[in-house]
Amino acid sequence: MASTEFDLIARYFEHQSVNRRDVALAIGDDCALLSVPTGSHLAVSTDSLVAGTHFLADADPALIAHKALASNLSDLAAMGATPAWVSLALTMPEPNEAWLSQFCEGFFALAEYFNVQLIGGDTTKGPLSITLTVHGFVPEGKALTRAGANSGDWIYVTGNLGDSAAGLAILLKEVTVEDDALRNTLLERHFKAHPRILAGQALIGIASAALDISDGLISDLGHILKRSQVSAVIDVDKLPLSDELLTFESDRQKAQQLALTSGEEYELCFTVPEENRGAVDTSLAHSGVKVTCIGQLRPGQGIQLTQNDKLLDWQLHGFDHFAE
Image 1: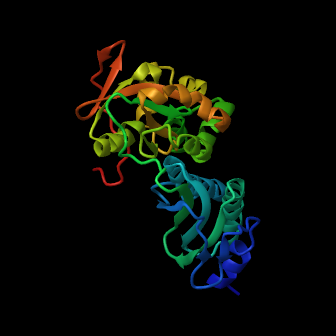
Image 2: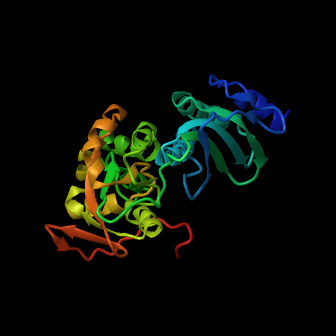
Image 3: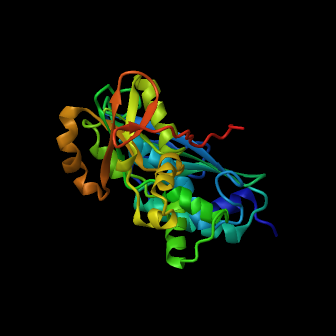
């Protein structure tokens, strides 16, 4: 006998290790009932992942789940928010319980790590896709946004850039990597990003603007520039590149271009006024992630790339779902 929608929900989603006190009623009713702490704003973000666009349909379900939740949690990190709840809408061609079991393993492992409770959602039949809505808390008036940057602020990024693009190229068999350890490391960095929650929280009161890198630094930084009405100068020699990326792509210029255009990195890009620069390393020391200053904001519009104080004429673009 085939499993019904409610059988699947009861079997795979109702039982979880995270049970937060601020959840009065979760899965099993028409709505969840939730309590928001006094003095906090509720931060909410929704993202969809579609088979064939964000992941291959035959990819490891546990990795798909991690990627789906990590990408949403990264949006909370970019605002300086503390994660709390998530809802899940899952569309599948058929009720594949072996797939669901592995998906839930990856999903709940990451949810437990960040103390996030699944509070509801939906399951439907159709082409494979995953839509998550995450909720978090941020102190009133303290959220990091894209609109607070000013000319003279310094541009920083967390972690390394470019590894996700390298992993994707391997996954799509666009390149062949003979070194098993290198191949597996880059594939894992594509699928298993670690949302920079602690770093985002530490940046409250220090950063003037922030966002997460999902479509490529060269594209995402443009959102800060547009909202804050400034321009940027980036020194490409300061871009943080991993040893693995430089092994994968020994041409440093091409590696730098990967770092600028690589999507699904889920590192933070943020801007810091001169008077707060000295607090960056100290405030982020407990987050366990390195930060690198890669440039500065200026008056005007657009992004200038430099090397040895000379302008570069690199025509680069990040990811766009609707680009031709």
